[in-house]
Image (cartoon, rainbow, N blue to C red; front, top):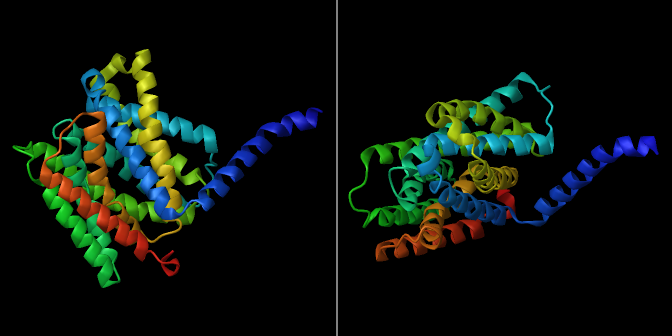
Length: 301
């Protein structure tokens, strides 16, 4: 009986891990990407409500701190990794931390749809640079047309906000490439957990310095946990699993749905109205994503 009790925890965790793995295997990689997109945009919309209470730095700190805590408790990764693997983990974590800091600084200054649209230039660059077929370039160009249309009707936009969004886009493009490497060098969610912990170490000092004791209020902590789950734990887990199965350039084209989903979530959650040109942009990016999904043949995975 004592032996059974001591082995119950590890065996239960192994069972849950195996079940999660089978669940991921049953879901096509393109569906994993789409689920991640919905989750992260809902989380971003909810995070925007926290800005008045703790600011953009505080929101990022809460998001990454709780995400790291959840993932570390779930996976309990070993710190004994080869030096090359640690280099990938550190690169992933620093990129993730900077990407979140820049994006939330942009989100505090410009609308959600415009911020995500501008940030999308990073993945779009990855999609174009990694393309090996003319059809992939066609889908990327169609998505680029959607990006241009989403910029229409935005009015006077804050230049600093746009620059932060561009910086976030550069980090996002790098995140796709480093995330693919992380998937190759680590198993399950171990690399993601360690990378998220590194990202938290990058962002939390900024949040503490900017918001201080406001971060410890109970409702702020609960809201921060929710944002962490929606914006980091769920989508990054799905992204990492998808990147194990599809090449980075296909992943980048699929991410063309981000601007459209951000506009739709802004409409539903934040009651942000869309210009008619933005609705055309939605059709453009949906068509691009559908074409890329159809073009992701088994030979590419």
